Length: 115
Image (cartoon, rainbow, N blue to C red; front, side):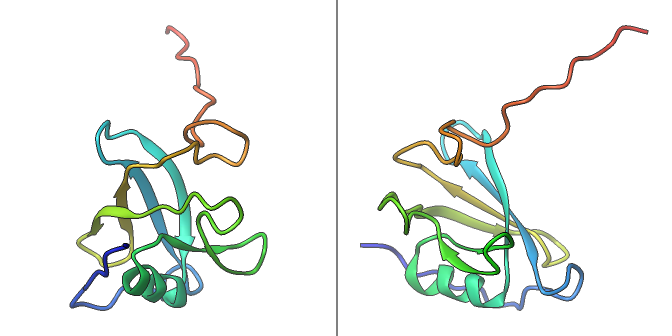
């Protein structure tokens, strides 16, 4: 059963056209798995259902992570920054998170060029 969450303050959705960035991080390794966005509806649904719910800009709608494949993402921690406009969601995914089949979305490292 998914846990419900409570946040006593209001997120600031005014800076990015009604969206806030969400950093999804692995609860055990600390790896950043993906960055996404939430609008107020997605934030409220995440808190109420205990399942990460995002605003998919490409779809133009709220979307529950896992609704397509049944691998829902349930937070172990939800942390809001000091400006109330960015959220870190820690989780333990049961499958790869990236839509391209990778564990996380950050797969292309830049190469440092010696000076």
